Length: 360
Ligand SMILES: *Cc1c(COP(=O)(O)O)cnc(C)c1O
Ligand code: SF4
Image (cartoon, rainbow, N blue to C red):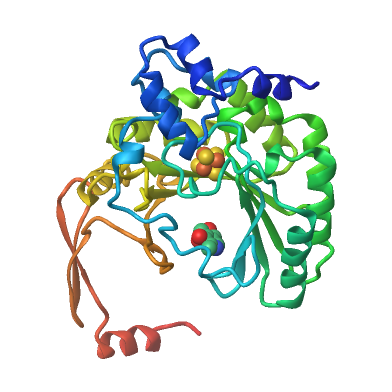
């Protein structure tokens, strides 16, 4: 057994085991939740928890609101409505999500797909074939995002087969793999995994860090290895109430990710997912985070803040109000320090004059 497999097996995957580690939990209440939404905290991630209620613990230890919250939707983004074949969501013109595995290295309590993840019935070969056939017959699909669950929990040989089949499709240019592995089970990133995947480049990894405490020596080793093997890495973070909804915390995370050669890509407003409503914030929180980034730190560290529109409208970017006024003559803008600036647009005469002065 490899180290990462041992960490998975030795982790907490039942309320009983959780109680052994944290005697203060209410076993009866958590049993009711675990019957609906599975628990998994692998041994590595368990080691990052300092105490109950801390930002690591809250991502993986169930809270009562998970089954009392009825304000949201099971499939908030209507991913199944946009599924032409089971296990594939085709919403945008040239790209699709392809679900290849519903297991994860931890089960995040806020997961948008909590209705599905941890389903013991893993995805059948037949379904994966149907997904591949769909992609083959839709020549407009040039970008495929492998998702789940966590694709990197599959064995190297299974990944080789699926990614190899995608790479053999002439119109598939980009393959992305959505994964929490570098932040929650970095031991899974081995040279063997890199060798398997790099044969099929270009492959981007869409990683998912939630908190600066996940930036450990182990996760750095994993990201260094991935970067050295040519995988560009983009990070997606969900804005989580009481966990990371603080401009200082997210700035530390995003700047820290750059040191790991990971580009902060999306900051998501938490989806309206049943059982995860207690993690949601208002928009002002996210805007505060964004205002604290632009101008104050490297532009590289600034992600897009987006709301994935309920019902399947897709990702919509949200920006603080930098543009105060704009008409034919001028744009009036606010900079990151709150100072006001004006930009005058060229009038027709000015444009003509400057071109007549041109040496060409
Ligand atoms: C997020 C998402 C994608 C990828 O979107 P990008 O903005 O290109 O990263 C593709 N399909 C679906 C259904 C998605 O939710
Ligand atoms: S790793 Fe991703 S898919 Fe798995 S539970 Fe966490 S958020 Fe959901």
